[in-house]
Image (cartoon, rainbow, N blue to C red; front, side, top):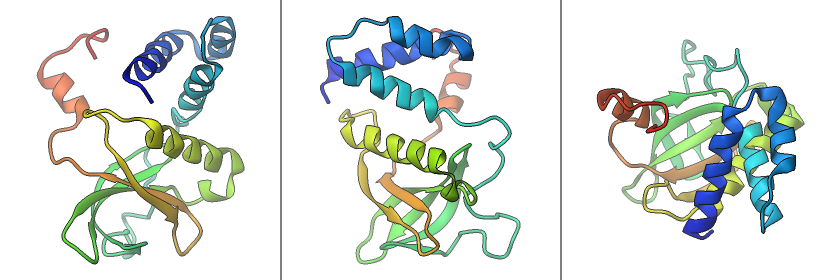
Length: 176
């Protein structure tokens, strides 16, 4: 995906997010784009935005003995919970056959049986696979866990979260 195309996708996403949620589809229907796949990508990102009320549940029960830490997924061993969101959780993991730290995102338990949620997860993975930019994490791998939940593996960059960066620099909404 070209930088110009990525910029257009994110520009339209920002504009759509400024609309009330019930107006976003109408807004996208009125947008003129040379490439209709741009509109599809923006719509997929809007759908992947997450569902209110699901944000506190990780992919694995972090209070149970099996918190996901130490679990093997593909050729990776989960070592630390990094973040959780509406679709699942992101873990720091280590590659088993050589020394490499990665981030593994796993769909949340329960969402793996919901076709709409699984499709949103796959859309997110596909969008990430097409994005090529120095400031966007690279998709490395993907698959399905032993218990049937989709996951994908991304390049891990150790640093502060974008939210923390924005807060520390007191960025306005437009700057964010």
